[in-house]
Length: 120
Image (cartoon, rainbow, N blue to C red; front, side, top):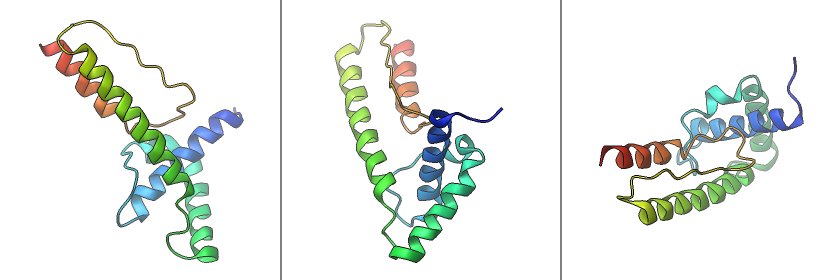
């Protein structure tokens, strides 16, 4: 069974994140699981990246990584604020990132907050 448009968009975006991490000397996004989440779309993302590099020159393929970095930074800020607001309470905070696709970059922050809360 093939992916629908939403599923494919999630995978191709993960593919772009993986390509940025693997092919940029100074990646602006770091998502260690992106390559695994991209699945078959990784090859398409790599081909698109190479095509952009040839057509526009090095450094011209930053649109997707830049947009992802803005979203990543906003989410990280919100998670840090939640952590500060709820430190020591021992309660549960649910974070729902609607439309996040297959982004795993913030997972380490969420897990760190959870471990910190449960070990206090």
